[in-house]
Image (cartoon, rainbow, N blue to C red):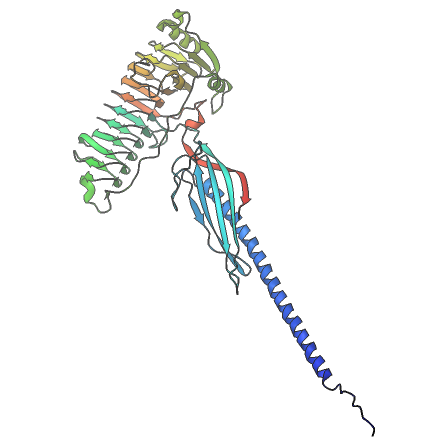
Length: 497
């Protein structure tokens, strides 16, 4: 009996192979989709990171510009609206930390402005993007920059009368403006206006402003503390009245204030019945602080006068030694001053002698007197040699002549002060700049075209007529002048996260 062998059938193998091939293709397709999705997400993350870096850098740049444009009040931080780039959206938040010259951190509340004088700033900007769809990934980058902050100082001395100490004006004083009501008065202490005073400008005091009788101002009055009247006040104020640290008490006399009244405490004034006139219990603050400008008598300062500039020709600097002692006698020092006034070119006398002027004289040139011994005048008139030809006259007691500041009335520097006596007069073609770190006194019947800058008290006693006229000055220490704004300069900029 024969045996039959059956050959295994290969039917169905093709189907199995086809199924396996389809499976492999599907797997490859899934892998491809996954890789594509991963690549797309990775590309999106990279795109967001790049956007975040750019947004963070924009935050640094914005902080830099904010410091530059912030004048005296650069901000403590800032934030951006949404920044769109293609499908992505980013935003940054910038904080600014300020440091003074000693490296101490200055107060800078969130959303506020810096308190103090900054020397450096650390700008930190954090930028984030939107979350990618289907995941928790979002771009985030942090950048920081350290910048030096350089002050931009005012180069002008723009006050008619400046007193670093008390400023008192007793009787019959008129201060006219140079160009309208621009004859501003400023003191870092108290201001007292007793009787028959008329000021073609504003009055600023870091202390108390006291008004009396017919004291009148064509501008504003602004006190760091309070405003009051010592007697019946029947004058007027054309602008506003602000008392940054106290009450406004004008309850004697019919004096008028055209503008509004702002007080940090109560306001007593007959015109407060008008709606929107008086605003008590507020925060008007003190007027902008003005430092006393420093003019030294050192060689560096004299060299600046010798070079000229700021509208002044070069000065011939003439030292006048105090030895022999005869050099400092009133007659000899006055003779030297009068001789220099006749030269015909700009002259500067630098001396440690006290200068006493008691004889009238004329000048043919600009004349500056730097005296560390003080200056006193008697009854005299100073005029131009040619009527109508303008000349500048500077009476300066250098800042470094005084052993301490303020120095007025102290036993260590009793003579370092400008002290006019009686009937001190100038013709209309003489512009006078008076400067002393100590007291300045105008006693009686004085006329003046120019400016007065006193580092201690300034006292004007009777019959004083002044026209404000800015007089160019050389050699003022720029660090002692008011700061107008700040200019930042980058030390470094880097990414931290």
